[in-house]
Length: 400
Ligand SMILES: Cc1cc2nc3c(=O)[nH]c(=O)nc-3n(C[C@H](O)[C@H](O)[C@H](O)COP(=O)(O)OP(=O)(O)OC[C@H]3O[C@@H](n4cnc5c(N)ncnc54)[C@H](O)[C@@H]3O)c2cc1C
Image (cartoon, rainbow, N blue to C red):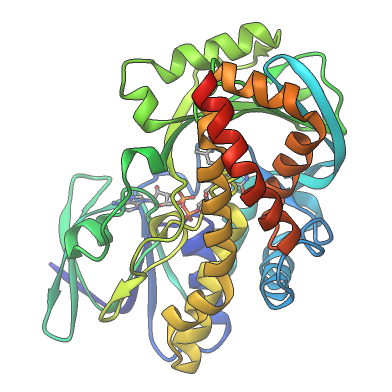
């Protein structure tokens, strides 16, 4: 069987659902279909579910990009999806309480948020099919054909003029069409996600940098506002591949921070933190969200970046402009800075003793650099701070 559509979006996460809704809402000339391999709309959730407020990033990022961020938040974030309003960020490095800084963020019900976007897209005319997995796609004539399996064991082909990979990492669209060079192991994080209880206050998010617990990444405790917390760790793939099990790191974190898991299962997912891939598409096949590498390399946040890339692609499909040009102009500068900051900080994130030495050298410089990197700062001052820190970090990690 062959099913025809004008635009096929593979993946109904923040990126794919936002694009489907954007296209039908803005009068896209053609039929829009979205498929997702999940049986239930966007569940289970593997995420910290932290979202910045409108004001948090304003002083740190470029104004035009902030406008796009605002547009995505206004289109998707309803009051009822906000479970908790967080005011502070507590930074813990190697068991030491290093700083407490302003951090107005929301803890959201991500599943409800995405479900709402999908339902609105469907209501406005998009065809939505969950329980459908894309197996591979090929270019055929003026378009593409994707072989899919449905949840009842059926197999069919979807033929489309435009193909969108919103299917995160590793993307079937990317791998079957050979669009990009992909990510290397050092640019991938294996992240765990669980729900827990512990003696932590509702107004404070906690980030823990400790190479023993989260080599090459960090651990987090994000309060949900009801006494429970979203918790997890992100460990770099190249470290994990050397034999350490991310689940052991997760359990060490749970014990050290006296957390009590609410549910037994710990979910895991791979997250790309290597910045944007070398290409965003080929012909009329495009990548958005995690599939194009939109996760902020310094903090692992990807919900809004995914929607930002979807917004930019949607705009270009409606107006006939070039997606790559708007990505390079608006989003790439921030990503390039973030990847530079992450790479400069990497030697510390991988080595506990180096982290200890850096902390002794300058606690306040460490705290402010981590804070600014977490906020995706595009300020020149942050760039200078990191460039000055670079030789110092090399020195302390060489000594350690
Ligand atoms: C543990 C963890 C914690 C995180 N915490 C945060 C946080 O606090 N804040 C934040 O902003 N970001 C966070 N992120 C990142 C964020 O979750 C992602 O960046 C974001 O969800 C990316 O959206 P997306 O739509 O690109 O991809 P996804 O949300 O991953 O959606 C992709 C969809 O594609 C579907 N799919 C995949 N392959 C196929 C296929 N072959 N056929 C059909 N469907 C397919 C999947 O089922 C999925 O629904 C976290 C990530 C992890 C792993």
